[in-house]
Length: 340
Image (tube, rainbow, N blue to C red; front, side, top):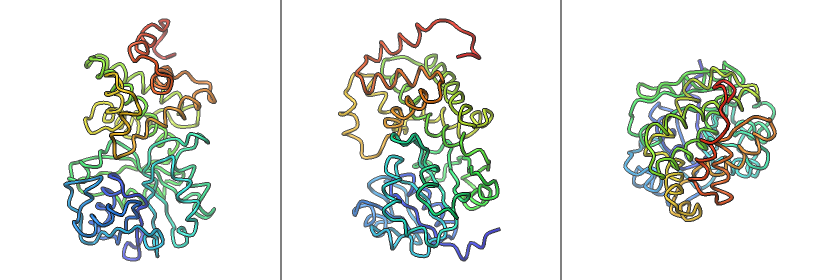
């Protein structure tokens, strides 16, 4: 068991999820500092004890600090939690390579796929971090809206790493009476489940936006899981992992929960609003929009069938009518369920 008295934590990213997890760690007695890009976020956390920009209404402990200076955040940090949106992870960490100086464990809590490289957050971190940390990267994923975690509503997630020992270490550090953490060595499936479910959630939102109800939702969730599992298995993930928290669990929550940003994007697009207009009204990143681009390319690279991903891509990026997208999904040739 790690000596927590010697630990210092830096959370890189002051969004809703980074803040919720920083609160959790600080309440565990771990000295925790958030690095936030926005000055108003750091000021709000330090002065008002809440992140009024991204996580309003959630009280933060006095022990939690925030800063706009990355060097200050990572000074003596033995654990770094990356809560940066996926498409910005490489830039943030590559230009601040010195921040790994004291770190001996990295925790990735972002959910996406980098468009240019088709890499997951942990794979990006593995490239930009020192080699000594290669097997000390753990992904935290699962059904967990930040606001509900911040309000201490019961939740369960998965800590997954290439090293089961590191995964268990992170599990124990994050586990609380209201935040139950399981461990796994299947980081491939954990990350892909967390990333690809956002694309299916956009499809689910579009379905609701078109006026459809629960039958349609059940079909999207189950067939979406089939697509995610096919892609994950082709990349070496265990299909059984996709039936768990970071797969089915996260998919159900993100497709059905009103707090889902990706579902909200799909809902408005399904109602006929332009994507640029919808995104312009949001102050937080909907990872699924960029992940849709990456997922389509990934499907092509792997040679796997992902028809829902394809129709979401055509709707978001080639202005396909959502009703036509649905018609094409429903009009596909009949086939055995197991074969997609």
